[in-house]
Structures are given as C-alpha cells and as structure tokens.
Image (cartoon, rainbow, N blue to C red; front, side, top):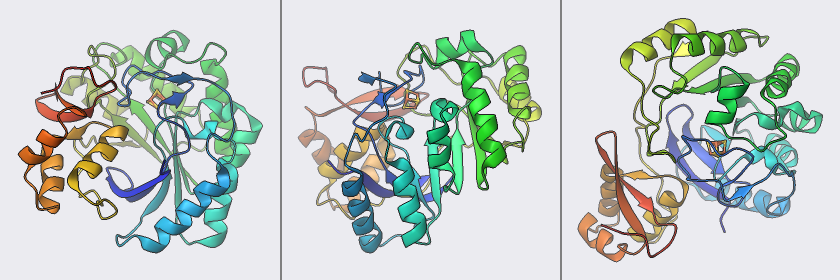
Length: 315
Ligand code: SF4
C-alpha cells in the first residue's frame, strides 16, 4: 500500500504531494458530504496505522523521483490524518530534511488534545473544517464518534491558533438546506471570528464531487453570495479543480484510474485525459475496468467511482 501519491492538482494548494496516513476511510467522523463514502473504521484512537518509518522512506523516494514541481507536501487522503500518532514526527522530518512546505488537511476534531496541537505546530499550513453552526448540526453533518463535542473542538482550534506560527485556512462545506440558511451562516461566521488571529482564509466549499449521501446537494447562488459576504476572509468558490494528475508513476491507464478512484470519484474528462496519456482510448480502458468502477452522475457531470464490492452494478 503506497502512502505517498501525486503530485496531484489541488484547487487550493497547487501541485500537492499527498501523504495518506490511515487505511481507507478511517475517521472519527462520517460526514454526509464525504467523497470517500461511509466510514469503514469509525474510531477516535490515535496510533501508527502504518509504520512511521515506512512513510518517511516513501516520502524520501517520492521527493527524489517526481518530475513535477511540488508546492506542498499535504497530509490528506483516506481518512483523518491526525489519527496517526506519528504525524508530528513525519512533519518534523520534512521540515528538517527538505525545503518543502507542509499542509495538513484535517477535520480539526483532535485539536482539543495537547499532543495533536504540538504535532501540527511545525506545519506551514493547517486547514481545519468548520461546517456546523452548533452541536446539533455538527452531529447531523459530521456524524462524529460520540465522545467528541463541538465546543471542545472549537476551543482546541482557538488554543492552537494562538500558538501556531503558520497559516490557518478554514474550510466550510456548505450544503443546500443543511447549513446554508442565513442563521446558520451567521453562526458559523461568529465561530470563525472568535478564533484569534482570525484565519487568513476561509474557503467556502460545496460538494463538487459525488457525496456519501445522495440528498446532499450544492446550495443556491444566493446562499453562497451571503456566505461570501458574511464569512471573514472568504475566498470565492472554485467549482472545478484544474490541472493534470501526475500519472508518471503508473504503468498504464487502468492502474492510474483505479488508484485515483480509490481516493475520490474522478471526472470522466479527466479519466479520458489519463487514457490518452497512455495512448489508449477511454472506451478500451473502461471495458477493462467494467468490474472495478461504475459511473455516477452528479451535478451534471459524469464521474467514475470505484466499486466497493464487485457485485455492484457497473455501466
Ligand atoms: S470528509 Fe473528512 S472528516 Fe468527514 S468523514 Fe470524510 S474523511 Fe472524515
């Protein structure tokens, strides 16, 4: 199992060399909008899900061998990265041995723990999520393990922000009729404004890729405009990621598409580009993958999604 992937194009981080620290869908949340599907390993336990040393070795290899520019080494992937107890050591290794910037995309849930705040101190950029206006909606949207309380998470984030020298970019996932009312946006804004220093950027995200729950959809323009007005340092929404996937490390299109769809649904046009890179046609590739992936329609786009079990219907 490779823990380091990419560099892949990221809407916010440019070319991002990804580091995945946990097995597929290991998380202490089961967000309604998650593009990885339902949480398989629902846990709040911090441990070495993969040996820390193995991840450092993989990183060293990837850094030496990539042909693309790297803007960030980003902790992201198949679940919540701060559940890995070696994350602090890996970040320190990157900062001591390389000149790359480090970003951590986290749900922020474990920042109430002193050890997690310390682990992230050496990162350059931390991107925590704040999707809920209050405890009730937190349970509805993020569906956390029972013992986590929203207030504690926000307090942890505030403590972290006070001692952190890097940047904090908050991510807010807005969903139609779930958390996009004026009242909810006002409350989310109040929470973000209570963090000092106020996060440098607030990204208003919308579920651009097929979410776990079918009833999750993109909010109307009016709500989005209200959010942009109300949330501090809000960044206008970018609906599509642009740029190319680095598929150099793969030997053929099937391998590349399977690996990418393991992490998130892949737009059809991006899959087609990958097939063309390997001098194959998308039809040939899809024929070979018909037992592995399926099409899903979402927001007027076609996506390829990896099948969880091979008896699911394909195309
Ligand atoms: S979106 Fe992130 S925090 Fe939410 S369930 Fe998926 S991996 Fe966990």
